[in-house]
Length: 121
Image (cartoon, rainbow, N blue to C red; front, side):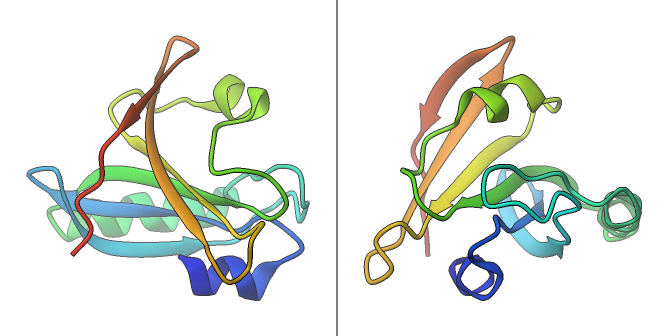
């Protein structure tokens, strides 16, 4: 995710994570149809392709990720407003400090933000 965020800067990158039993298994990079440094929207064709691949792999949608290129790894109001998958984690990778990327995870349900611990192996 960090490499994708750096490659797509100054625009935000995005994608999805498929998993099993709450553990991440597969990262599915996507195109940001907004092509914007301030917001992301997973390209609809990529969304369809990824959801199909997750289903075919016997995975579940575990997380949706995107980058913040200038700000902290914390959901913006836009991120909260667009959070449509209450069962998925929202991962945000900040590359505001290029040599010290930051990754944080959140549940966003009914406009409420709840940070979640990540166990990265």
